[in-house]
Length: 71
Image (tube, one colour):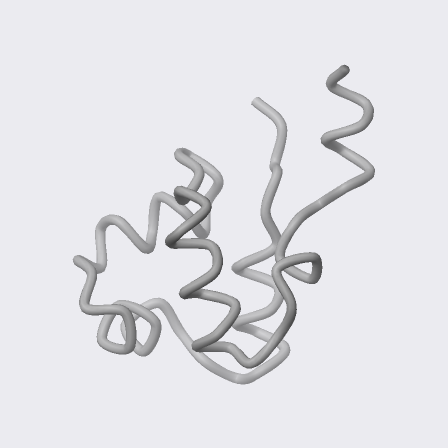
């Protein structure tokens, strides 16, 4: 499975963790863990919420080059 998101990297760059994001979004930590490990991908709505919480663009959370390789 392609690693389509950079949530883990952006969290680390901001010195934040999964618990912080779970609390900020009102989501279960297990859900955040699945997103961070690329086990599952967040919905577009969730991705926008993550970007807003981290104060980054959605584009910063997406691994465009790996998505293009999957095509």
